[in-house]
Length: 319
Image (cartoon, rainbow, N blue to C red):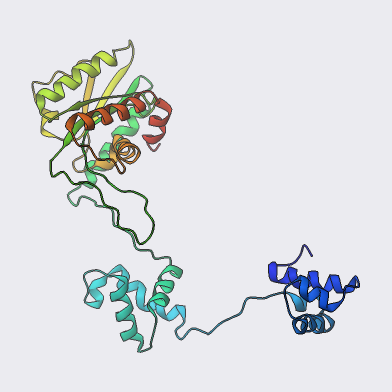
């Protein structure tokens, strides 16, 4: 009984067992909700092949008109390069129509989508990636970063800015429903400047209405007070190439500034902290006033500052 592969097989085996224990056929049929004719067919099958004859096996269904191998040979090249089929991009509907024309057979839309899934293709939004990256510069930076990691007295900090708007991002909703949110028409936005140490999970951030050299100098002054110098320790602050980061009148205090390669936000781990901040605190949130947005931001930033293990995990750099 325990070896039954599914519920249907278990029901049949249980019925045969009841019959072997002396139960009347009519009573067994009533107990399992089947006709006496069906119980009689189970008995015939059991007498011919034993318990294996009672096991319910998957039905093969209608065979496919086109083999998966042929579909793979047609689809994979044009999926990787739509220009081969005279297309700029693919949708499920366009791909379905093109495949029917190529194969000259009638295929259902769901069948084509099933083929795509079996070929390990899914519809995804591509990640935006800068085209003007300098690979030589990026490789040199990684070598320099590895050298920094070999020196125990060096502590790496990463800084960056993030703009947050008071518009809702997304929400869970039942399929078929179209959620609606209030629309104010006001451009409510706040700018966050932050710094994080991935090794320790320490973080510091400030909120500004706008961003320029004076605001960034204020941030550096407060950062230096919050994270004071320690004897025998060098603190390196790595930033992108924003214009206010390179102003000659900036006072960096005990931090040594270093710049990331151009167009390389993926080298700054604080970017992942900004994504976490927006996902955790601004999903389905709408700010009606600047003060409401600022208060929400301060609550989120304080939660991160008070939770270094989470920050360290979110901003962990690859070794």
